[in-house]
Amino acid sequence: MHFPPPPFDPPKAERMTLPNGMILYLMEDHELPLIQLQAMIRTGSIYEPADKIGLAGLTGLVMRTGGTQKRAGNEIDEMLDQIAAGLSVGIGADAGGASLDTLKKDFDVGLSLLAEILTQPAFEEEKLQIAKNNALEGIRRRNDRPSSIASREFGKQLYGADHPYGREATEATVTSITRADLFAFHKKYFAPNNIILGVTGDFTKKEMIDKINKAFAGWEKKKIEFPTVPPLIERKEGGVYEIVKPITQTQIRIGHLGIKQGNPDFFALSILDDILGGSGLSSRLFRDVRSQRGLAYSVGSAFRPGNLDLGIFVAYGETRVETTYQAISTIIEHLRKIRQEPVSDEELKRAKEAFLNSFIFSFSSPSQIVGRQMSLEYYSLPSDFLERYRDNVAKVTQEDILRVAKQYLHPDRLVILAVGDEARFDQPLSALGKVSRIKLTP
Image 1 (cartoon, one colour):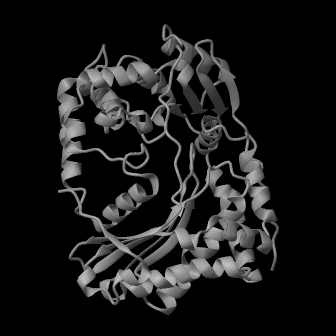
Image 2 (cartoon, one colour; image 1 turned 60 degrees about the vertical axis):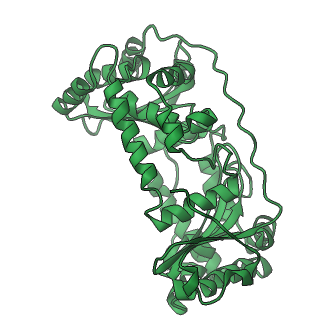
Image 3 (cartoon, helix red, strand yellow; image 1 turned 90 degrees about the vertical axis):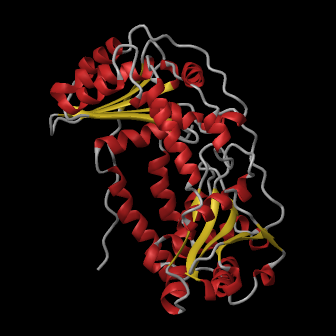
């Protein structure tokens, strides 16, 4: 039986720019008396000073917990508990975010609190110290989990340990962060013209615009100068890296830098990745490395496009230490094979159908739809990117996959990293190339 792909025609949120420069997306949904608000703020840890790594994350966290110029943090917690509302703030690598989920009858209270937090944070010293202590404890424990070690050190090799995408906080950088640093970071990046705000739920357009204008009244736009982030430089050569840890399973990471989200070959690479290792049970890596050969507990691949710069391609696995070399060499064998011959008709058909049939579930709620539209604008992607995404995936051919495999997969430039007990490996990793041993910082 054959069925056509389900229709894909998600509604569009209405976009406007408020007098203060804030970009607003509105989508009414009167099914339930709920209102959801989400914000994207153009900031991120990539803009932190090199001696204050961890500042962005602490700023976002303590904005939420550390009160405002009008209310203490504990008071805000109690008010949110009383109306059963959720309010969060956070700052990641290349974006800040905030969200509010509340009943319609309590939205005015929730919006007032969110506006205070975004415009007048107090960054209470006590809450900052709690956040810093938690961050320091995380640093002290960062070498406890082999999978985290593998991903972190792999990223350093791809991005560079000193690049904003590869560097990490230390006890020294976190300890040096002061309350004044949080105020300065907030002052530099938080302004209405640096925010995209999306609202979905049970409201009317005019009413919501009036509420938002009132909540953020007096918050003036300003010019923001962003620090220059150095471009990522692709390694011309790969390397083999080993981290010795007395564990029973080896964590494996294999890959190199990838592409930006706007690359027109992204669509073909998405299907290539599904066939290779991204689609779980039906992928080549899962069926061969795990199911047939029994070499891995988990195995797969991911072509993660970058938002502002190059992303990464990574093949990963977890195997018994006694089969480390065999697992690595088998994964590399699959990377070479997919560059040498077309994928089968059945593989292509299955991958495309799985994607096309599941894609619609990424837009199952108004908040998801609005969030996607906000993200497209934030990262300067075309407004019809999602519609073209589905259409372009449907057009992918075997020839396309072979072409992008040859162009974007580089077996001769692979960074190969293993975390495990090298004394028990089935074969020394030197068989793959010169080995560099990484010593973890206590």
